[in-house]
Amino acid sequence: MRGLQGDLQTAGFQSEALLAPEQALTLFFARARLLDPKTETVALERACGRVLAKPIVAGAAYPAIARSAMDGFAVRSHDTPAELRIAGEIRMGELWPNALEPKTALRIPTGGALPPGADAVVPIEDVHVAGDRVRVDSAIASGACIVPAGSDMRPGETIVEEGRRIGGAELGVLATLGVVDVPVYTIPMFAILSSGDELVDIRSRPHEAQVRDSNRWALAGKLQALGAAAKHYPIAPDQEAGFEELLRAAIAECDGVILSGGSSVGLRDLTPRLIDRLGAPGVIVHGLKVKPGKPTVLASAAGKPIVGLPGNPSSALMILEAVAAPIVAHFVGARVPAAQVEAKLARPLHKRAGWTHYVPVRLEDAGGVCVAHPLEMHSASVSLLARASGFLTLGETVESVAAGDTVLATRFV
Ligand code: AMP
Ligand code: MG
Picture 1: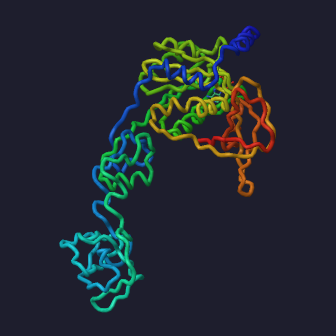
Picture 2: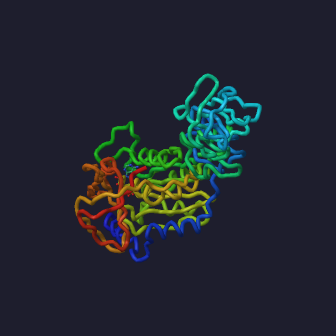
């Protein structure tokens, strides 16, 4: 019986039929009929870290009128050079009521509103003041030392794009424009469902043949880093009854489901079979031409994605980040490219042509040069990715990379 199961497992995937990750994702998005991401409005005070669901457009010119860029004197440029009468002092936050008269100047602070008639500011260090007179020795160009109206934001101009994660700079714009109710994408909730009879809760002490269910925490952490949230479901057994029940609850209650384990083609690999019972289109991709992570399932039902990850810890986490991240991103709404860094490869790498390899690397700053140290891939390792800082994606056509070659490493989110 064991022999039969083993044979089925290795005989299962037809390598020639497997898709590269990009092709698999294209097929998935074409067939999955995913729901649109949800949106909501949050107070500006709670918007940090969220993803903007609508572009932020300036409703009016900013600044509303020209301001001084220096401490000095507001002047009419064509009066200069000249000795001008100081007609008064503009204060911060105040509008000067009258037009600046010919041959006069007004004291103005940095950021002060330029009075009508003035078109330039002469910095205090460039003039000579005596009593109520100020002497300007050179010809001042129109527009000198002023911040023109609308020079920061023009009315109707899109300032922050939809899909941008809101941080300090974006909050500054929202606050300036008075956008106190911010349209954001709702943080999607992904169900996490680990399956396997060998799994025990993290607070239990496993005997030698058991393992703590670490994947759910690893996957939940990665989901959070990708901008999603995780809802934990109990450990599913390697039998249809209890497993199917949990899966049905997960798809009903969450925006998507991430499964760990049971995704291969063995008799006890229930994930693909149970997913197909949830509705159309069901399993779209089963098996990827990648290492690690071949036994991956991409599926959907009721407009919600279902990702079946292999139980091997390094494979599960790597596939979630390297392959399934765009599926999560569809609901998160963020259009943030992965952080990539150029590095020199520390030792040569050889791989199987036709396959995509994800190679974990430890990145080291060697005196201003980033060096990528490849780590040996062990799918079953729990510690591997915690020792790495990112990974290399070696595409189908690559067969080897020489030591010292420049490679593009993707930092983990
Ligand atoms: P499977 O993909 O179900 O064949 O699982 C492959 C291996 O991954 C198992 O033998 C376990 O050692 C390990 N594994 C599966 N699920 C988990 C999990 N939730 N946490 C940690 N290790 C797991
Ligand atoms: Mg299993």
